[in-house]
Length: 269
Length: 337
Image 1 (tube, helix red, strand yellow):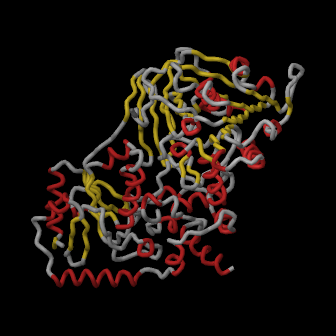
Image 2 (image 1 turned 180 degrees about the vertical axis):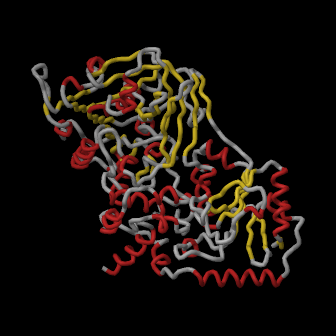
Image 3 (image 1 turned 60 degrees about the horizontal axis):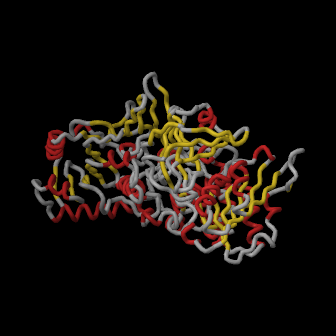
């Protein structure tokens, strides 16, 4: 069942995949790890530096645990110094993921921005062959698109729509923000739920667009990012109103978040 | 209700020491300074003269300002759960109420092993409070001046070397069993004493009106106003008996690595900052974050009360006057606007 709350499991890095110039996927063997649901996260501990909360990118059935990390801060930079078979600590899985089992019959509209794709990839690989999936993904430039080979493999099995903020000579696809892709003929609220993960500003406009398209607040699920230390609702950093992002989230229906945003301190995303 | 004398307390101290308890009592820092809970051997060693409350709340014992949680030696990882038998002697009712809230927070839902280990094997001896400071409002916050439950033993100092003690737990009952029952006139004297004490509190009509009726909207001027006063020192958080936030950080030593916990403050900008964004970049939103945590009924549901015990430490320590009383007064004024 539950592992020691604050005591990480020490694991050797099995494989490292360079996804983009500033993003890498770290692979670990799963043994000794409790099962997870897509959307849950783990704390990655670089001993001597600190911990960061990272979404689990692999599906629950996989033998491997995958974390895709963008180099942005102190801990992620230290993690990028690590090589294959170096040891780091893992704690988790934590929080509530996407409630896939509730939506067995529904169409999944997945909308990702930048490094927000990994938890959605866990959803895709979990729900593949079960749900009808349509993925909308936006990255800054073509070079910033993560999981390129995997997206290529998946394009015959699910609908994938890509866009970039700034194109280059190799890019002949859409250019613009991800909300531009959300057209009424592609995104219909009937029998659908939307799962969203990306930067705050992207999620803000995506929610706005989905509501315009007729989605109900309780059918829009967002995976939040927040400052976290303990991941079990004790350190206090990730509190938004009466919820802790680490325990009650990181995945919330927008219906819950709207109340929090209206009433309690700070911005939600 | 039992009647005890100073000699009886000396006996109790002996019993506790023989049972392996470390005893902490109020001690005044040299040159008339602040009070702290320091190790004491005898009852007479405690400084009760002029003692109203300690500078730091007793949360320190269970949730230390800084503590090691993990040690990593090469591939061996050790969890540091410290448990010691201790008596905390002389806790004020406001701080006891604070501890009970922390208990619900740290031991409820997902129990914290570090807090749990430190909290076990602790005897809490409270002293009811007959000389409140002008900053005290435990009467309004429903936490004092006399504790209702949660203590092992509660002592009422009636002066002239006479103490009335009641138990609040099985352990407390056993320790007090050998002492004589208090006479009726002493119990009557205590009742009078409590009545007189209630008259000593500084009148605070705004506290009564707003402490349990927290309704400040997100865009209220109050937050901007308080945010202007706040000097972002974090003093109110560190001294608050119910503030429970911590930061974790790693330290590298020659032969091992330690992960530590330290008190954190939600008024500091770095508390909220992430790589790339900050959901509360301004002092006003951080003020709202702090006070909603103390007073909002939704957030405080698990505790069945507000997370302010009226100890007055934030009022004493804040040099910018961005404390609980300012909030309550501003709430009162906003209504009239």
